[in-house]
Amino acid sequence: MKNIKKVLLPIFLLSFFLNSFSQSISYEIVGGLSVSNLELSINHKGDISKWNRDNRTSFFLGGGIEFPVKIAKSDKFSLNIQLQYSQQGNFVEDFNNEKNFDEINQINLPIRIKAVLFDNLFVGLGGYLGYLVFVDDYFYEDENNYSNFDFGALASVEYRLYKKISIEAKYLFGLIDILNREYNKGEYKHNRFNRVFQIGLNYKF
Image 1 (cartoon, rainbow, N blue to C red):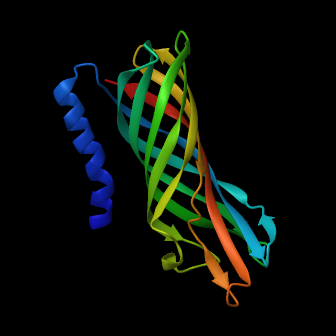
Image 2: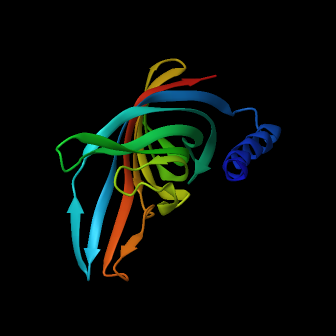
Image 3: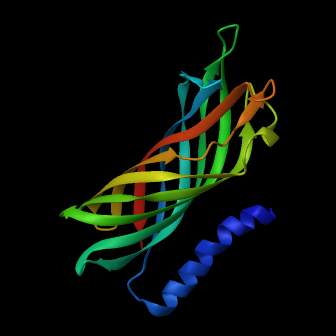
């Protein structure tokens, strides 16, 4: 619980601070579909092989803030910060050809700079911080095998459908190995990285 508070506290403090100095902040509620996978690679004495697994389809839900920022004297940019609960993971076949899924649920903090391309069309680039709140892994089993924290890059596209309602798509590319298991005194190294595609609705108020 203390670690979760450490993740939640910064965004609320930032929101309070920004609201004290600006009247142009907008708040938002976001939610939708997430399609995720955990890229698994096995390193055997420098020989790296990747295992393909099926995507897990689930959901994400959260909220955020957005406010304009000037870059190169342009008014076409804004900073967007969200706090999400995201269900992630993948499906895997066992030795009996039965499907099981690895469940990795996270609290994510996506931070991105958005730019206006055309009327109602926005693109964004940035990164995210993640905190693993639940792990149920079919093969690795013990959640203590996993790191508590995740970090990665993200890209997004957003289209305003009507006034305060938008549809947005994001791709989160994990850069931190959240597993990092070693076997046989380091002869084998197992690594896993988050790969998440999200598409959903955004309501600003």
